[in-house]
Length: 257
Image 1 (cartoon, rainbow, N blue to C red):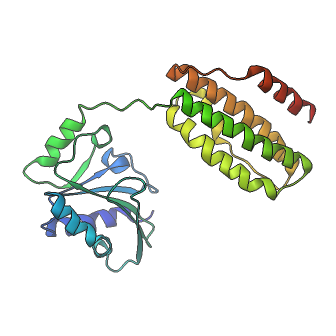
Image 2 (tube, rainbow, N blue to C red):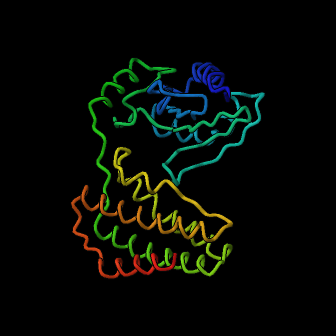
Image 3 (cartoon, one colour):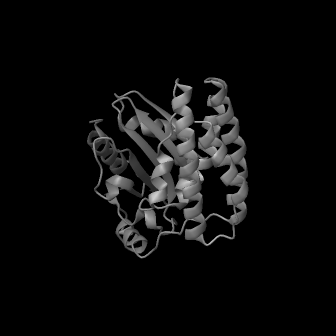
């Protein structure tokens, strides 16, 4: 749909002509051959050593634009996600994450399936085989981290809920966004897709109708408590909720219907 294959063709032509790029491969959905019309491209560019990578990194914007020189593009550093990551949005709809690596890249489970666009003395083939021997890390959360998340959840949740009951739609919206941002990503990161409690967290809802939003907030609380219980169970955390307080809060919310 967004001409990703055309970008891949141009990218391969470009890296084959670029001597400083020792190896290039696609990871992610294209590496696993599970891409679709909406998939982004996870591109790894590997260089001989740190000096070669630094030189290439200095010209990263010129390089990504040279892949499709007639297609306008914007690109952004994403070092907050990982070092030497540059993201490009091409105006044909393709999104490409360029990882700048060296041949000292250690094997990792996320690169166990790759699509090789350029290799160097079989390095990429051997690297893929080594990645296939690595295992996925187990997501972790400590009891202290869960306690911090729980305390902040209750404060923000109650701020939103009482204002929505008042009929205020505008003021609690920002707090609601902060609540989702602080709470959901850590829980979703440690709960696998097959965990039933995970699904309830994926129903964010905020409406002009404050009564409908209040109903959703009661559902969100139930989903949060189920997800928290699942995290404690799965990670064997020493976390004891204040059940008396929580039961009374839920009774109060039921009475406000």
